[in-house]
Image (tube, helix red, strand yellow):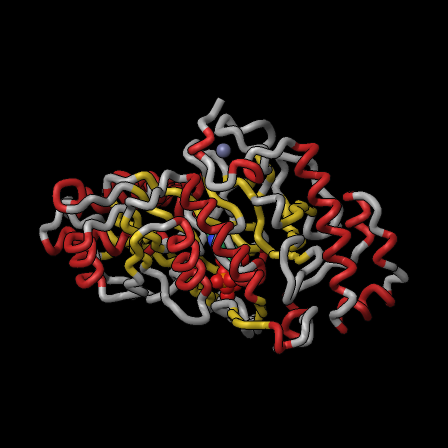
Length: 438
Ligand code: ADP
Ligand code: ZN
């Protein structure tokens, strides 16, 4: 039996499947009724010939049409609200990685529940009120700032809202304030380590860092291990998106084997992105989420475009909320090169296995005279001292392993540490310069 103190909200976190599903059905029915206050959903239901009363079981969710990012854009900014604007107290917007931004509205109750969800996640990975939590996310429209801020405060930690950038200042805060927990996107976590090396700071000796929360962008298991080894911490994967509030949707527990998705907040479906039919547990498909604990702007069957799978089986931690696997990428991240489907994360997995390499890389796609080609530029590790022949052998080995993984032979180039541009926000891993007129 797991100790009760391991849970932030023991009642909701340890529900068995039957209890979870009972609560989900109640909340789904209430949400659907409530959505009839939204002009958008009212029209959608009418078009589909559907009444809220038609939702009698959890399976009935499949009668409801999907909501897409395009719907959010078409109704930008407030067209999907289910409450009058006078009841909303905040809006957030996505970072716009893949196009125009979208807006999500929140009531005070929504913000309150969101903070509870984030606090629950942080507690699950061992954060306690005597921890010092430093957030390196941008504050503002990006939900990683305020989302973690309120969650960490709800848990009762001393919070350091450092915000993004200025890495030397971040390091000073670590040492001055005794930071024990850090939230960072994975590409920034590796940047922190690089600057520590330049400054002669040994994270194990000179800081109290113990836990790292990494998320907001796809990263491989290999990248996580690297970050853990570099900083001497346990790193936990955090998944969220602004459409679903932000952070706090799904989070790894101490088992580090998949992220529990909070099913008292969301109904999760994994569908085949082409047929939109559900796939069996264990198979990869598109994550579809329905919010069942939101007031201002509930979303029904929202197609996230993120690809993942349900991890079958029970988690030893005592939580029965389903686990999703680390993201394979977004469906729009998939590179189709000479008819082969490739996810950038596959390239990362190969690169991160080489201790000779640093953590920054860039995939460039170009149109040559006849064919499209891929170049993979990757920085060498700061500690690397190999000469010309060693580098040649290294390139050969990387090229061949990449070919095994992605079935394409890329041109591999080794760069000096620090050569690739660092982005302030999410890392840009792919540059597509292919001509559309071939
Ligand atoms: P944008 O869609 O503009 O990037 P968000 O900040 O809302 O705006 O980002 C949410 C997206 O970020 C998710 O849909 C997903 O693609 C990605 N993401 C978030 N957390 C993770 C994670 N832990 N692993 C992989 N991808 C993630
Ligand atoms: Zn667990």
